[in-house]
Length: 317
Ligand code: ZN
Image (cartoon, rainbow, N blue to C red; front, side, top):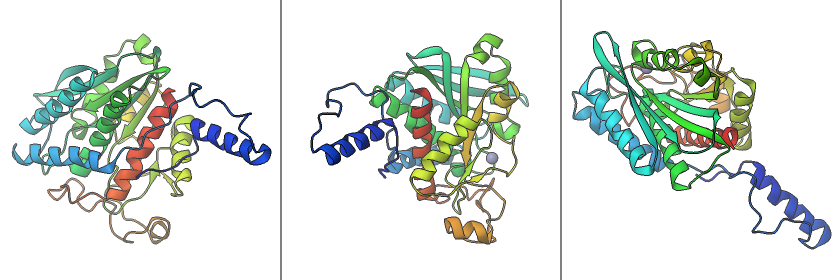
């Protein structure tokens, strides 16, 4: 869905419109050909994000029903995402590690250009638990980060900062892949990361709209987006440190992220804000075999995908 959020480009248009209203001319407005100071964040069509979820579901079905660390469905998920990124012009790296005697993989994709001393990262875990396909946890974040990256390429976005996208392995084994990545960064390369944005479970079927209460500037960027579409948010409290932002935060990198809830129950007050069912888990299929493409709230996935794109564009411009 196309949503209008006050950004820099929109603000310029508002000034031009106000000039037209007060003077009857657009003499004070910038010519239409003037270069934009910042590209407006794109709308990510939810259908495009869902198409990746359908692929993750098929990958699980063809590989014993899951996409778990050390299983064929995990590697097939990496191959799917990597092929899309390679075709779009990203520089991709597969980082191998071992956990529990099984080989795991992180997939890193750099968009060429921008100031490599100021890197903005967006990431999500690509592994599922062994009991199911992991479509909300965490096909949702993985698909939205992928679609944002593909949109960077499609629009040939040339940000001031350098963009890097990541898909982590073995999160479900205890944040193994993201910790491995952070531990293997040189201190110089760690210091170059200006922000890490995490997306783990962003399409929960009985959704809440939770923003991580970490770096204030990142948190504000997400809150601004949701305020612009008139959706209330709350601070994420269902287990701080339980996802891949934690190793970055421990290493001193500014972090933030979005979450629509896991096994905790939605309260009556939250239903008043967001609708849905009180006394029921945000995701009744959390870590279960029913975490399939049916386990997604399209509106939540759409809003969070667009918030992700907004933050990536705003923070990298
Ligand atoms: Zn999980």
